[in-house]
Amino acid sequence: MPESRCLQGIWSSPWIFIFAASGSAVGLGNIWKFPYVLGQNGGGAFLLVYCLCLLLVGLPVLMAEVALGRTVRSNPIDTVNDLSERHIVHSAWVIVPWLAGLSGFLVLAFYSVIAGWSLAYLERAISGDFMGISSSRASDMFTSLLATPAEMLLWHSVFMVLVIVTVGQSVTRGLSAVVKVLLPTLVISLGLMALYSVSVGDMPATLQFMFQWAWQDITFDVILAAVGMALFSLSVGMGAMFAYGAYINKRMSIARACSIVVGVDLLVALLAGLVIFPLVFAFQIDVEAGPSLTFVSLPIIFGNLIGGQFFASVFFLLLVVAALTSAISMLELFVAWLHEKFYIARFKAACLMGILAWFVGVAVLLSFNQWDTGVVFGLNFFELLDSITSLILLPIGAILLSVLVAWFIPHSMLQNEMITKRKSHFDLWYKVLKYISIPAMLVITFVGWIGV
Image (tube, rainbow, N blue to C red; front, side, top):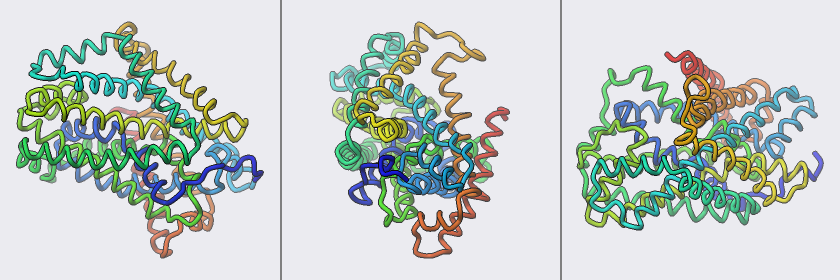
């Protein structure tokens, strides 16, 4: 492969890659989405199935994505092109990284808007706007935010600037510098928040809800939700892990690194649950409140607690940090490609892609107010974008990538990339990916499409 197409940066240590990959996985999905999905799907039964899905679907697919990214140490698009030029795979497989990049780009567009809500609520928390707040006022506060495009545009723009500035740096100066500080800070702060929540909230009810289950609670809908949540929370299918895998050295064990990433992802999700549910049960808030659990219910709780202003500020700051660590990875695929293929400076490439995502995000935020009308099938632009990415692009991308790795990449090449101490470990991963992960994703995608 020509030297000009090789990546210029390498993670300085295995732990920096683990921090970066964990930061990509850990995001709004863990702190904002996981608790309300857990609440809507019965608690303990969902958590059990979710853990199994992380192990049998999420981890194998994550390892496949990272291994493919490291295959020729290039950006994902040129990686597949290189494999095609060497007659290892057909050139049509280049659709995989393009689909992954498109998925990440579109997710970033509406992800930034939601992250903007977190920034807006961080400002409200610091200002003390939650103190003594009633349920009706909390609901009105969120409704007012959605009805004010100028404020949403401001925070959406601020967040996107943070993403662009970070991604525009080199791997060692930008991504590495951010994640090695933000991720440990996030985990430690969430742990302290969980201790606080447990001390003032209803811990017995939380333990019963989160960790007790019965066989009859494991329904097909719970399984579908758990598989989808596992894929979303690990950021597979968006090209992030594909791109990050290209920056790791050839001596690192992908199996060990990805296992730690999955463990961190699960840990943050559990900590988020332990932060939210003791307070929810103590204040008798509906656990099935859905997406509003964070932006409507939590302000009520924090506003009526001693020291609530401080802890509300910490929580929403953590939400912003989690959003940032995930968002910076969503631009990386196209930024790396533009930088290596066309010799565009990383910062210029990040500005170009970031501004494009910003424009799409403007359409998303307007869909909550001025453009709140059905575009296709009665869905507004945000709902349409969310449906296209979650029901079509992400699952198809994850399936195609897994099929490419499991059925078309030479067995010997994969084993060299995986670097496991025992051949039996590699064989186990290979069989699980082939005969469990791929069929499970096919079923979840098909069932999601037909709406069963």
